[in-house]
Length: 404
Image (tube, rainbow, N blue to C red; front, side, top):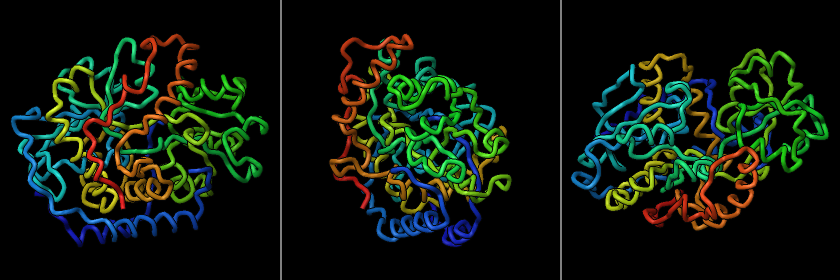
């Protein structure tokens, strides 16, 4: 049974915020002191209003795999909190394998009778995508699958995604508002002729340049995830980041900058992919329908519980960062800030149908219409005539689970 430690929660609430990295992919906004205060108030209100209901015991034993294995896309961080929320006490850490295994617990700490294993990704696995890892290792039950990745891989490595804990992709482009006072959105960077650094190969940038949102001559695919170049050129170049990370980190933690940044999500600029959703190989989903009918609502509720009271799970995340000791820098302040920013910017939010974790199928269909031409330009092998039904499903979603 997971234990709640009131004293620990109090300590964590006093820790100053610090930075994290990330790489995957609301309205345009600047991270100012007033905004930060508002995010804290928003999360506090959610904590007061949201309490985990008394959980009916749910047994996954004999229905799901004995160990349900999840593959993430980065090192442990708050963006993955809904998964780590499912890890019960007495967990075991494999630092060499960058993975944690423990009892899989439902809301309120109810033991489900099976184990959970959460594997770190990104630099921890040489930047291999969760989809490629799932196709290499049959032990991986579900992994992080973005909608754009599902479209791109649909021809050779198809996936079916079953739950969307994030409603909006946290990926952003950010800029210095002092250098570019007239820039209010990503598209405004075109007239400003600002260089825009990003991780090379990002499909959203292909979309931006193909549709004239940005010019090919102004984008630079050499971003390495560090703030060095942004700081060195005094904010003359824009760069990618996460709405849950960089805005707070650059203003409050990065002493070489220590000023607000402005930003817009790539979602609001038109690339409306779902990010960090959970999916698996189609045959895995088809074979394990009975398991997913029980498991997916547990995952939905885990996200609701996590954003309401993230402190205990953040302690687990920080313990894993320490034990993995692989160069990933992350602390309690950054973990707390990520949740606050995700809630304040409505990145974690109910779908239009009022449910936490369901897919808006119209949104997915509309996204496919812009994604397919983008991927055709770079030679991706996609399923011919791909539709939303080929890559996402709400079959296992419990429509009664929602944020308040």
